Amino acid sequence: MDITAWFSNNYVEVFGAITGIIYVFLEIRQNIWLWPLGLLTSGVYIWVFFTSKFYADMSLQVYYVVISMFGWYWWVRGRGVRRKEEGEKRRGGESGIESGIERGGEGMTVTRITFRLGVIIAIVSVILYGLMFTVLSEFTDSPVPEWDSFITSLSVVATWMLARKIYEHWYLWVVVNSVSAIIFFARGLYPTVFLYIIYMIMSFAGMIEWKKSFKSSPSTPNLEH
Image (cartoon, rainbow, N blue to C red):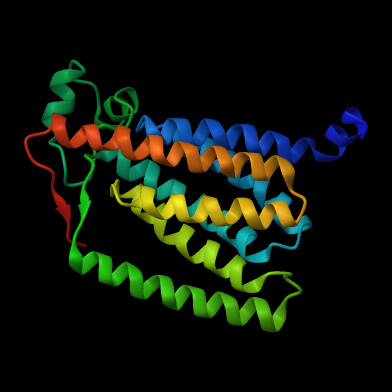
């Protein structure tokens, strides 16, 4: 295979894979800049998945664009988790937004999922799967509607959990990334397969890194809603 010709036909996907890897690295580090980079990566993959007929994954990228905006805001403001005065004291009285950006989103602390929230998330995931499977199998030519729906429904929930800094979102990413790598390999999206293998490895790294947040704080709050 001519590498130059292959790259010229797949440069958009390659670019998306590179920015995606950087995105997960920033996620592991709890760095606020993961959100603007996520907006860029999602824009790239809207096109990649559209041309590959992965319509649920394409719609998922649109959702990523929206949730990235909310996540960016939540992380900057540290909604209901850390006092604004603490940020001003540490950054010499800068404004809340500037302080949040410089601290890498530390205004919001890592939380653990509650039983109540876990049940809600499970129900939402099942409902999303059922809706997406029905739409994809009845109204599109998706080659794998059941797996496309599975990946998409879990990813929607996991991204919301990331935006709220809920630790257990890493477990969902391990499942999503493993299944995605297999499906995309079957479809010949090799740069994306590589990306999702890296994602899976980095998901385990994220579990370890985020767990350190529990040790560095006197108590780890649970998110009730």
